[in-house]
Image (cartoon, rainbow, N blue to C red; front, side, top):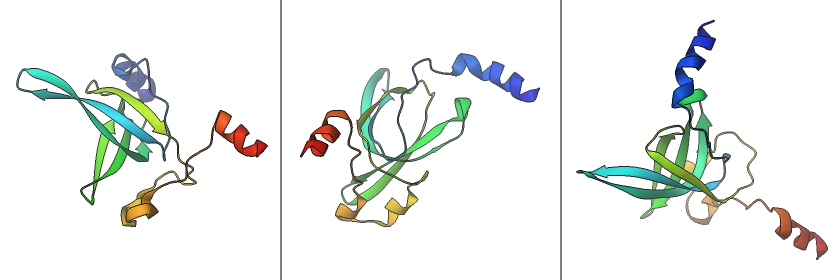
Length: 126
């Protein structure tokens, strides 16, 4: 009963167009930033290392390296501050949470890219 009430309250706040991405994907998150009276879009790109929650409470964590230092940001998926999420590349992962990437440095941070469609067919033909 309480779950049905919660779903009714959350429904108006959910986005119709939910971006499809998975843990291990490299994404560009377009965030709306308010500076004074002006609003601009800032892009935060990195690897999705975790997804959690459901409904309006669904969150995802994006990690990137800035000046040799790891930076993580946690975004609410259905927030009006998130303009869009673009998937740049998909990585091959076997875990739901990629917290082990925090301990890695340099090239060890990179994930192997998931081959799709034409690339996979071309590789199979060779």
